[in-house]
Length: 186
Image (cartoon, rainbow, N blue to C red; front, side, top):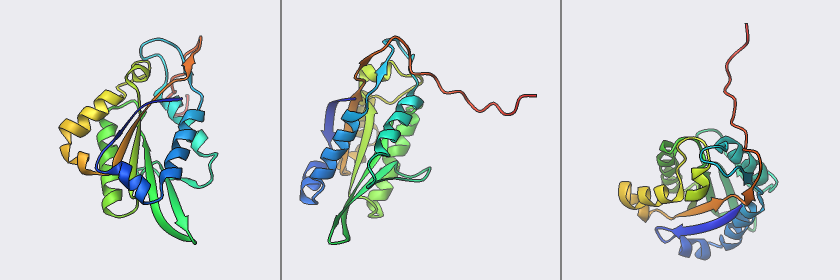
C-alpha cells in the first residue's frame, strides 16, 4: 500500500520520539507499505474485509507485533529496554464496512491510553479514493479527521496518529466480497 497522509494529534509526534518508539513507528510504516493491494477501479467493488485480512496477514509476519483479542486494539508492539517494557504503540485498522466502527476505535484507544496499556495510538484508515472503491460505509481519511477535529473534539488531545493508506494499483478483478455465514443448508 501507499501511505498518502499522516496527521498527528495530542503531542503524538513528540511522544513517539521521546519514548523511543521512532523505530517501531517506522516499522509500522514498512508493514503497511509492504502490503501489496490491487483493486478494481470501480465504486464500492472491493471487499473491505479482504483488505483487512491482507493487512492482518502482513502484520502477522512480524513476531513482536501482537494481535489482540476481539474487542481490543488490533495490534500492539512493546518497546523493551533490558527486558523491561518501556513503551507501547497500539494500532487500530479501520477498514471495516461500517464508518460507525471508527468512533469505537477512538474509544478503544482512549481507554487503553488512560489505562496505560499503550502510550501512542495509531489509526489506519483508507484514503478518500481507496475508501470510495471499497464496499460499505468505510471511514475514509477525511471522515476520520473531521470526526476527531469536530465530532469528538477531546480526541485531539489524545496522542493518536491518523494514517491514510491507498491501494498500490489496479487489477482486472475486484477483491471478492465476503460471504456471510448463512448456516447449514437443508
